[in-house]
Image 1 (cartoon, rainbow over the protein chains, first blue to last red):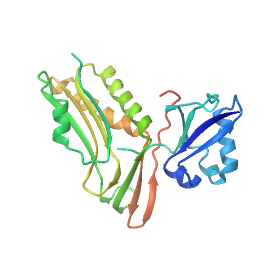
Image 2 (image 1 turned 90 degrees about the vertical axis):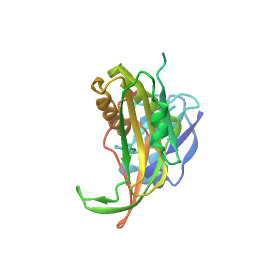
Image 3 (image 1 turned 90 degrees about the horizontal axis):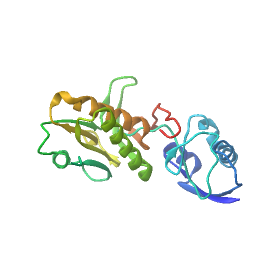
Image 4 (image 1 turned 180 degrees about the horizontal axis):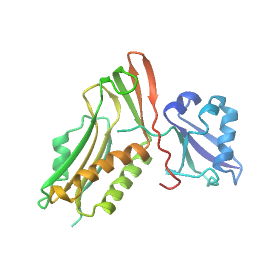
Length: 82
Length: 152
């Protein structure tokens, strides 16, 4: 197991009720697997699961990406700055 | 010579003149400046009134992505000299400038207009900033439509 920091922004933070959480995840966990894990803990994420963006260490990432040790993982809706 | 690139996320009022001054060079003779403004009355689509917008950013990633947008501009338009990409966050009321994208170059026909346009379009695609709209009919997070590719 290794520790990661998970951040939530905008709508997702509202759904989760928290800006960030620290989690222990098994080595080799992918973004997809972490997403499923989070949906179990925060069922309100289910409805936005398919549209949310994921960044690892501040870079957009793929679902099959293995999460590196000590990573900062951010979940957020499509951006709307400007 | 190194051309200036200004990247900033701020809670302070945008000083458009000061930002332009920071990307003004002896060699430049043209500046294209785009600024987004909080719209109080929307008629396109579902007509409604906006009381204010609350902006938030994933600041470290947003700064990285704004720098990436500036790099993309320089690759596409090598004639661009100065670039400023600025986003104001926090609570902003109608009539307030929210963002500034400015590009400078020697002459107006060297891509400055297109470069500034590209800058705001890309900011709205890949820079992790969000706004919540508080209107007469309640509040709602505004969501974009673009899904960046891995590494984009």
